[in-house]
Length: 196
Image (cartoon, rainbow, N blue to C red; front, side, top):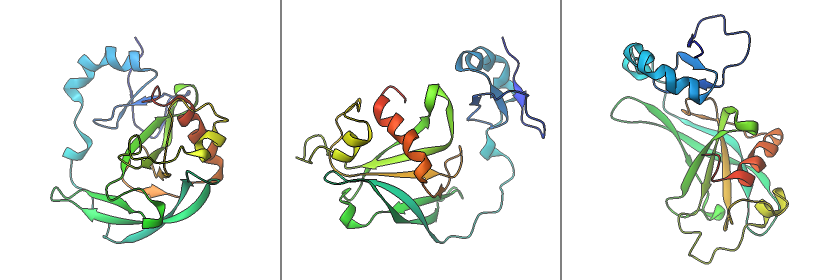
């Protein structure tokens, strides 16, 4: 069994792949290592949000670049409005507000992609939004995804899809999607649902 690494100023000499999602201070080299260490780690694993509260960011509005995968044309980038909303528990989350022309419906469904190439954990996960009812509402097959995956998508997506990029593994706010991220999101569509 591998040891658990604690977050300090000095990280291990090689990159651990898994972080404890509960306390955000323990790192593991694999999911098997994490599972075997859990009985010992559990006693000292204090949820990250149970400590002293950090100052809340001011509520506001921001705009980030998102990848749009339209059903009937090539992909493109667009600016999406995200608004900071503080819940009753004091946690601030950034919520996207999609323009009606993106045709995602009133309450779009979404999937968070945490896994990258070779099963590695993404440092900046992707948040994929799509129509809740795309499987039975007559939405056209998404030609952008078919082109992006050269017809190899593991799932037949229909309707428009919008991809936002989280700012970090805690998934609290968003950052700009970059052209260099397209290969990673193509990998997601090639392997979904096996990546989640």
